[in-house]
Image 1 (cartoon, rainbow, N blue to C red):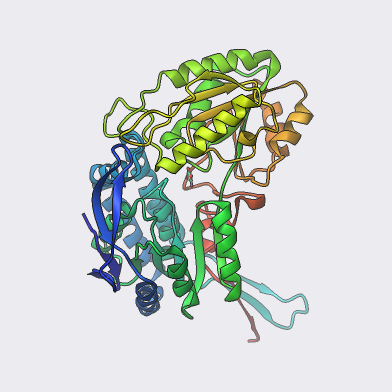
Image 2 (cartoon, rainbow, N blue to C red; image 1 turned 90 degrees about the vertical axis):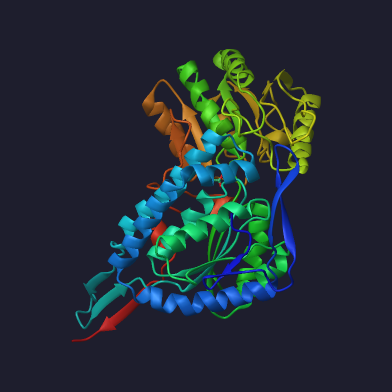
Length: 475
Ligand code: SIN
């Protein structure tokens, strides 16, 4: 286990010797503590990244690609160790944690293949007077702020393309899950990433840490995954230095079941879209719109599937829903459920927080939820499925789009043309049609509206970490 800051390839105790306590959310007990970085440590880390980046960017694309591929293999070789760390500090079921390691590693394999395909362009100016040459150099030093819900994958989804493009990075992992981040950085160095190219500085002083890192003149970009609320604050701070930004923010995904859908398939997809990683994902289905003729059937079958999930410590292989990350998450979910029930929703299953130790909320289904209820406007980030019956498709689509978010959406329909037609009308960056999962390193992950800026993964993901330079040339 690594419990120190990683700066310039050295493991350090941090400028003031403070520690961050890391808790197991399944027990509420401390499992470890890590060095707490200060704003001065963040500044030093950017210095180290800036020095390392110059040499890293000079390595050939093939050379960087081979190192990225070695990182993919290294993470896979340590699947069990990393998965155990993820479950210990995040709480998710161990099978989900192992799945996350494979997902996290895949960002390195995918981006190793993209690293040798960062293409520019050469053309002739319309006047015929000169050539137009377009190239894509790296941005330089990228500051990354990552969330606790995917302690491994949300780091690798950023680090792999950033390194492939020739950048160096300074990561602020979440204070809840720093152990996975530190161990991954350790493994990346073992796989051949040069010292200083990846720096990890956990902290409890997020605001001043961020200011120090982004006020450093070498920092050129911020990549953030987290809530829209925090994203707005970081965007304002980045504006002062006109930093390039990539933002993966909150969601409020509608899950639509049309009257002719295969209900068993829809329930299966709903369970994936809702319950993956204990329902703590920004792509999680947040509102279920079921056509009135099938709403009762869908609700009952969904409740049966939710009731079949065992809740408990994610280390137990039989558990399908682990703890929430902290007590305040349980309080928020409880409040949303209580408000929906007071407003007339029926409690079909679950509904009450489970006594500790640990921070548990059971899989819950709410029937006949009114479209305006607070639970339909707020990201639940927990195992609660509010079902809203609908009769008119156009009105339902208006309701589905009635949110400032636009990350993921899902449609189940027996008629593919109808499913695609609805998908095209949804204001969401990603839509699953007869499918409950959209995440894939080979696909562009990201949101419309206030769910974010930019895309991660796919071919465009690596260009987020590049500049565009144009050269007008006569020869
Ligand atoms: C997230 O919840 O932030 C990411 C989910 C995913 O990549 O599937």
